[in-house]
Image (tube, rainbow, N blue to C red; front, side, top):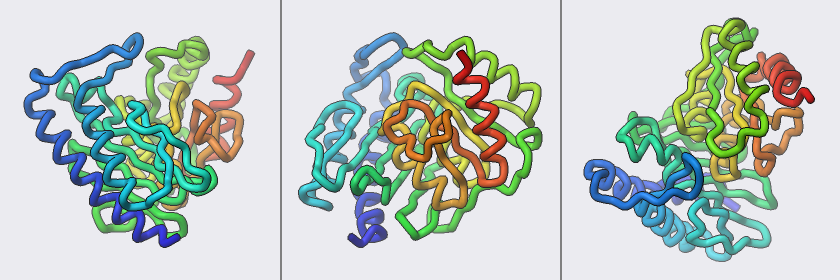
Length: 265
């Protein structure tokens, strides 16, 4: 498997989907919006963009399966699977607020081996392939060098359907507001994680996530020199519904704080 070639091929497919999404964003009052659940929306744009991605990626790697948010194709492959979010940050997209992004990851036996996040607001392609480092619009990127949480800028995402950890989450916000340079929330987990990879954020955590939210970002952060786990410190958060990631220097401190607060009885 030539991971680099697959990664660049996937980027060409994403460009086609992105052109459609961008066109529709300019006339957002004209498309239909469905409510999948409380504060959880899908538009016809999500569905059409996902179809473009599935069609293009199917030709790029015949036999690969799909784990796709909108269910265009959920036929699992034995070895390879594309993990797709056609519009990460749909609520932002509906309201005309950036960021929102396309996120595509490729797994090989459940290990992410290629990952791409395209963020519309700044026209940025974040991408990585296994062993090839992490890149942004043709330039290599690296996670930050901040050495302590108290010196860091942390990002998170607010729960909107799963309120299991809401009390603990509010405590975590209190902690980072008081013990870091600040706490941010963009509304697109894929973008948040990409920002950790390129050093804009020093760390990120969120719960209630799905594989398509994090697949590409997991590889981006690791190839950029950062670290990723679930709240409990397990190194494979792809299907774990919660994630913490940061540069390598603050990871142990950040993960320990989040585990203590978020997983307390």
